[in-house]
Image 1 (cartoon, rainbow, N blue to C red):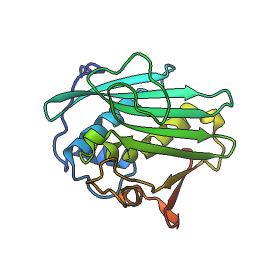
Image 2 (image 1 turned 90 degrees about the vertical axis):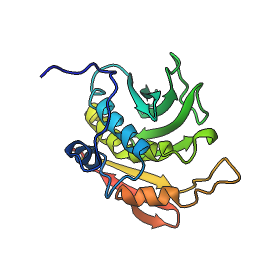
Image 3 (image 1 turned 180 degrees about the vertical axis):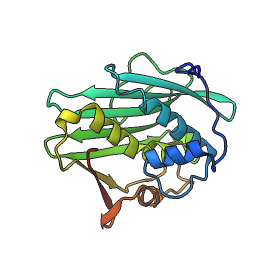
Length: 212
């Protein structure tokens, strides 16, 4: 069968499709995903992560949501300490050639997730955020829900850094809206439970990822 171009646009079929079940299983998401935009981003994130075992540190995937073209960018930032930082950003149109791995949004970035892998402590921590003009559209939810796939991907790509105990991922629910008329309290908690995380404190959730 002829392979499709790497950055071609793909359309998700239905929530009952076998492909979607595979995607949800890959990201270890329990239950359904209600927003089509979230499902589409996860579909493309799945395709993107299949290519990231290659040596380069930057990967892109184009997608269409409601007739608009977006780019999902996955970038790996090795640290001098030997640890790894990851940034995944959703951009309108084409992202800039160089993006910063900070808590701030890069030019044209709509939503992002950032993960910090500490191989000495065997931990993963991170954050996700959506530009206030795009809140409520399901973009930020997708950024958090793809976390399990990113962790498994990094564990494969840097298998020499992973101990037998694996990695302990921690999520803290401090979600809030940047718009005063919107309220997203509890959003992160809901998504963490959907991802199979266990609550250990009032706003803190953890999950252990073991190497294959």
